[in-house]
Image 1 (spheres, rainbow, N blue to C red):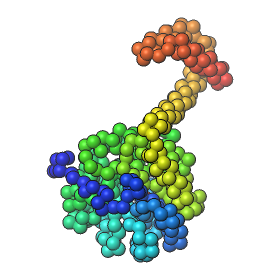
Image 2: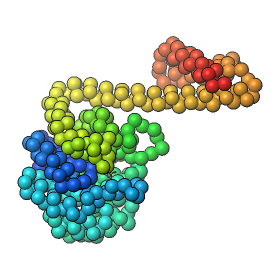
Image 3: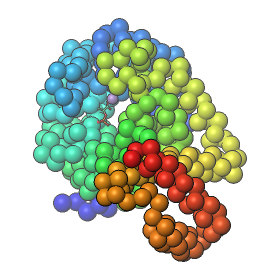
Image 4: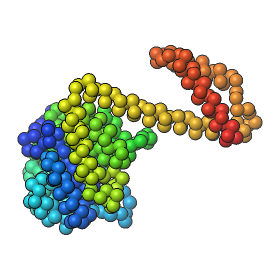
Length: 359
Ligand code: PEP
Ligand code: MN
């Protein structure tokens, strides 16, 4: 097994076009038809940005019976688009047969999706299929927040003889509730960057956000964390997309977002920090609101139980204990005690109202 230090990624700017130091990957979640592909990629090419096209032609769907991508017949379409736009093509692979077909059609990069990285047997099969070809690979994080699985997939690909590798952070599926489709857990991709110096790590805000209105804030956060690029799902008519319609954006919106990011990069360092801090504050506010929702859901349960037990809603001893306990906790956290007392009083009052309503 190679030591981690054996992984020496080839500097990405030496083998891929970059847009002002950023690796930009854009294109449809899935290829649906030749027209959809052409319209979308022409829209991206018209931006003049240096883009790597992403095209899902074999889609791993959680449930059977859903659209699974155009399949192998889309490979000649990609060939044609490459010729007319000059943009490199990337395709998701999950089977050795997919790799074979991509090699036959001169696809420049392949990527492993989150549902593939999660399975070492599948990753090894793909690694065997690329053995000795040097085919560049993007490796998405596994669905679950398992750092070793992600690392293991990268090691297997490197052992197959390619050092043209890119890690893609697409967020994680956990039991934690989040406004996002996949919770980012930013420390995991940051740890990867630390453990494999020189590894390009890009962010996929589309699959993290799961909603087009949240893509911007995830992308900006990724840039603030100095990630090396972005993979963003784009569709000429997102609302009509056969897969992931909520999270795809038009080439025009993609272009605006990249322009905004480029402007931010030129911004004063303090302005940049201010933006980042605001994003953190937004995230914490969402978490606070989610916690409040959970707390009041418990008030409902407590209210019902008190009724069953014939107890009154307000229990003075419990109330006193609770206030004293929270004051102690506030002290250890260095919070303003009078503020915390007021907050607890508000929470308590609302909890009483909720309990009465649900009695
Ligand atoms: C995709 O890129 O369309 C995709 C299926 O993503 P993930 O593997 O991250 O779920
Ligand atoms: Mn998708």
